[in-house]
Length: 180
Image (tube, rainbow, N blue to C red):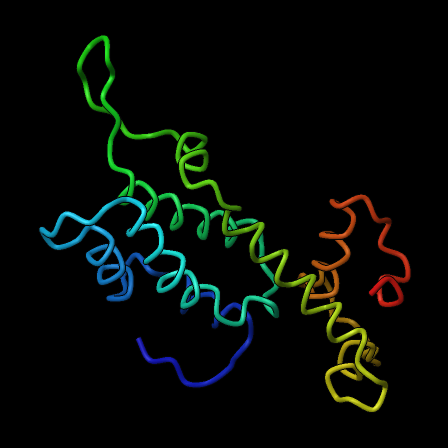
């Protein structure tokens, strides 16, 4: 898979999320699994947080995530966490079973990947909103596109994601730039 610079968010997210077919996931999971070396769960979690997550979340502040993409990221995270924590043995029947998602996140005791992305996105938004009006990043943030909109439903935009994230936090979304 060749990655040639910054494209639209779908191209970037495809590069990061489509880890099922890439060598990146294989290497990440092999590192977590330990290649026969018995690593402690705490060490595996630290490797996940310091090596794998930064690679997957690189540039996530600017992503416009759809629900499908959010789901794929959650699946990836759960897959890695299942590799870290392994199976659970039922004490009564003695059978082994996979951990449920709720059990995984209770053991992981950190925020999930989607919450992490939304937190980073809001932090970046506040940073850009506090920039001066002469800065290019701020100009892009407040820029209004002119012209005619094409037919059909418009694509989800980054600003729309910010307003949605703020609405979920209890803020109505109006005048969010001055909130920063």
